[in-house]
Length: 156
Image (cartoon, rainbow, N blue to C red; front, side, top):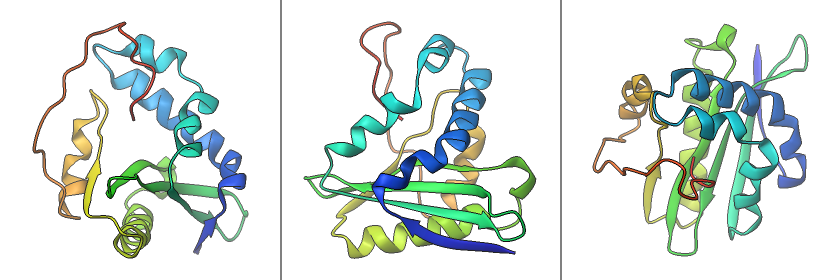
């Protein structure tokens, strides 16, 4: 059994092990930006959320162990852009509907929080997740190219 809940921003450190697993996955899959993911820290990543007017952290917890096995961070910026900023589900729990449940919660919140348009960024090398996002109505509209080594500290 999985239980789902919303956590306050001050509890964001509870997802650090999962975020680090996601970052390792991105590092392994990246062809061009390995060094970016190799140097990135959780503390650098969450800095973005401090400046946004609205954010929510949704987590799934395995009831038998009490361990957080998946999360999604959703944000709404000042211009009304709702974003799925980060999502990850532990390998043993993939294909069990955890990602879908987290996305449903996040998208429901984004709709009610004044999001005018929604987006999600996918890291280079992780394009296999496009099919997952299509189930929620997300399609590739534009590809943003970045030069390596030029202040690429932010981003997904």
